[in-house]
Image (cartoon, rainbow, N blue to C red; front, top):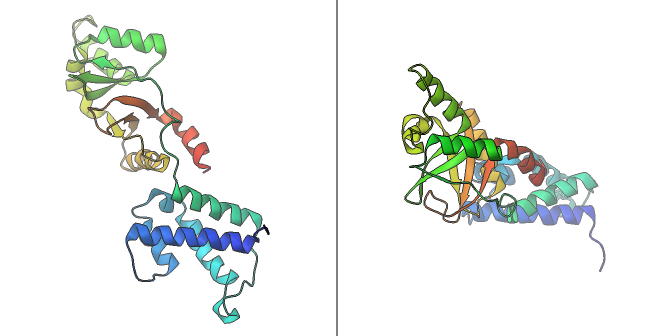
Length: 239
């Protein structure tokens, strides 16, 4: 089989991206590529991430195939450009999911457990975040910062009794200050990246994204993604 030229590879990937955007927007009539990018970027994390590249590729496509040349190829894109547009097309067709990359055993504690148990588990395993459950449903995310803040409040009134306060009570007191999200296994890494970026833009810190089989607080926990995992997310996405 004859090897495709760079122009043919570019145009094939371009057609895939254009088709996927039209399908995403449920459009039957033809729209300019730049318009598709502008609209699709609002609802698709892949398009949003690469919208500036895609707009440039739209201009490049017009330079490669020009109407005045009868639709014939009149230019050849370089290898780097071809690799980039093919990567975007592949990510759009099948964006990397949170699993299996972030599948891991998640330590869970019960709302009735004393704070002392959480401190021991955090010290033993080096964890800074632990989901707290009540009747098999997550009611909040315990963080090491919450424990320290709670201890600071208690110290004002004397000794700290780690065994006299339950995690449920601590969550009720400080849990609203902690931001986390829960996603299903099919969530894409682009979705995760957007969650962290959005919280940051709103002046908040997203502590973690938890993965459950149902995508809600009552599901079985399959993994967890924290701020420390963001470099791995970027590497996996090649951005």
